[in-house]
Structures are given as C-alpha cells and as structure tokens.
Length: 402
Image (cartoon, rainbow, N blue to C red; front, side, top):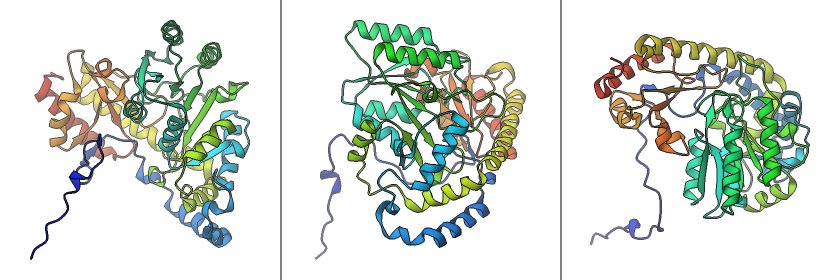
C-alpha cells in the first residue's frame, strides 16, 4: 500500500517570509548584487596562502575557533589591527574585533543585541537594502535622512533627532555608510563626520559606521574613519572582505566595546565563523594587501568608465548620475514620472537584471525613479550590450529615452 507523504506546509512556523524559488542561474546581463570582478580574484595567491597556512597551522583545525577563542582567528584580527591603524587611523587592539560570517552577520548580531520591536533606527534616505530589510523584519521604525552629493546632511539629521526627542523617542543607533556610500557612492566630508559625532554625543545615540566599500577608492582622498575621530565609545565600526577580496568567502568583522562584543558572543551560537577562510585571508593579505587593492581598483575604474560611456551612448541626457570616486555601483536617476520597479520584470525577461531604486531607500517612494547598477561582475562587452538592451526595454516600457 502506498504511503502518503507528510505535508510540511502544515508544520511550518507562522509568519515565514515568502518561499525562495529554485536557482536558475545568473541572467546574462547581471547588474545586481554586490559581486566582484572575477578577473581580479587572486586564485594563485590564494592557493599559495592555503598551502602555507595548512602546513603551518593545519592541525589547529581540530579545535573550534583554532584555539584563538570566539572572537576569531588571531592572525586575521592582528592583520585588521594593522590595516585599520594604517589606512583608517583607528587605534584598536585585537580583543575589540569580532570576526563574522560577512558584514550582514555583524549587522544581525548588533540588531539582536540592541533592538526590540517598536524601536527606531536612523539611516540615510538612500541606503543598503540588506540593512533596511533586516530592520523592517524586526518591526523597527526606519527614519531616513536626506543626502546630497556629499552624503548624509547634518542639518537634516539634527532636525530628525530633535523631532524624535520631542516625541520621546531615542533612536537605538544611526546607520551610515560614510565612505563610498551604497548606493550613491558619495564620501562624507571630515567636517560632517565631526558633526555626526557631536550629534551622537548630544542625543546619546550610537553610530553604526559601515565601511564595506572604503578600500575601493581611486579618485578621492580617503578621509579618516568616524571611529578614528571618536574619543569615547560612540561608534560601532563594521567592515567586510567581500568587496576587497571575495563575496563568497563570507568574512566580515565588527569593532566594538567589550560590553557590546560580550553580548554579541552570547548570541553568536554558530560554533565560530569558518576557520580556514580566516587563515587564508590573513596570510594572503599580510603579504599582498596593497598590491591587490591597487590592481582591483584599477580594473573597477575601467569598468565604471565603460558603463558611463554606454549610458551616454544609449540613454543620453535622459538619465543623470554622479560618477563615484570608487566602489562597484552607479546610482542612476530617471525623470520623475518613471517608476523603475515597473520595468524590472520586462528587463529581466530580456536577460537584464538591475536593482530598482525603491528597494534601496528608507522611503521607497523617494527613490522610485532611480536604479542601481553593479558594474564589477560584467565584462566590458557585457556592459555595453546590457546597457544597450536596457535602453531598448525602457524605451518600449516608458518612452525614455526617446
């Protein structure tokens, strides 16, 4: 007699997100996500680093956390101490750094420690989709602060903090991407960084400084990090190895006071972030960091130039954008009446994937006529073909460009 199977849907927990579809591969013209340049993955260097660390410390894989403790591999944290001091002017010790499975993991742990439903968090009006989506899932109120070409406006932030204080609301933190902002690519000037710290102290609201893209600068001076300007404990500093090396390695970190890290460790019940990746990245970057970044940035700048030329050719003055001084994204503005979300499906049907602006904003309506293009993954040929096809789709669906 045939047995009937279990209907697992009757056993699912309540309030689950929509189920994921089956993976069908990347579209041909893929301008979404935070992918990197495949030509700049240092395969041979990583092979050499892997062999070296396995011969030297492979037996430490017999223990959780490589006997380095729950904060992460000592070699990687020591590298970060040196890197942050040299390039970000941050004076810290390795016991202030927690290695995580990507920067999103660091954000999740921070949210788990700090947030409850009904809390308020301040972000930039246009900001990282992953951060906003996480806040909304936690039933947290997200308040967006307008930006200009230099990033978050401090006059608007002061007004927002003042208005919330009058309502009896103390935000749990201010989330900002000050260096190569995602999605706009702006860099917050040092004067604004000082003012942000002043407002943080005045209102008693900590700052989450997300610097995932800070290594990818080629046309501007790298300003001091907000954390380096902080004489107290106002800043939680997050970083990643996804953009300067490889997204698939899933390695990030957070620099925070021990009172915060100790609570994060109590919530981090994964047995430790993957050990071999930490060992390999530490060895590779201790020997190749600057040379690798110089080559990666040069290749990304070339891809951005290719993208801008393609947009000029196929869209003309129908769209506008500020060419960023680094990073992997271009934030493109369409005429006010265009809703890029309504074009997403038609473009995907033609093999072109882009991020609609409404997905990258605290207030989706404020970014409805924008889209974000990631230029790191595609080749020059794919960029040129993809933008030409994207223009055809927009012309058919919206009449723009004419």
